[in-house]
View (cartoon, rainbow, N blue to C red):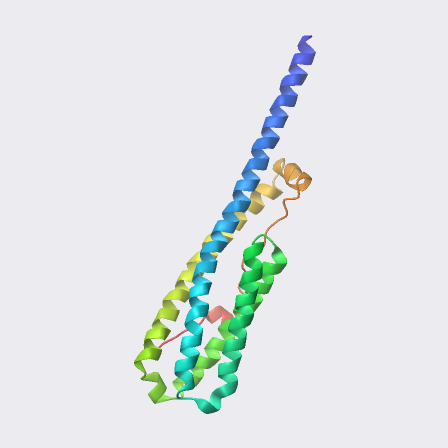
Length: 197
């Protein structure tokens, strides 16, 4: 074997090792996205479990506001289904987009429910509703922190998958860019769910 051949073999070996390292880094970062989404999922599940109790407590006082209560329940169910779908593939931009849309609709429905609550002093004074509202507010904060961590992880992954020369490995092995959880442009979603009594 001549010097040129040895240099060629060493260069080929270095390229293979680099490609393996790039591949492994992409796999690790994709798995980190799954883990970050799992943290969001835990908080969303907690939130989804609180909402029926909140609606049931409000139902005692606002019988004729049935549309609002049904809208909250329907939005919760839609958001839960979207979260279940996203859990299976947290790097799928379509599923993450559907979850963001469902969460925006749920936030709007909860905001309307809180506006109804403001109109009923006896409901506003209910201790159970206050406790549930406070717990929901804390959960909303946890969701926001988990969403930020998810988006940071997605950014790291996307940077790796799109920067040269790792983008060659990404495209060769089907590492597609992931979608962050975006805030919507609706004013209700931008303000978030504010619960105060």
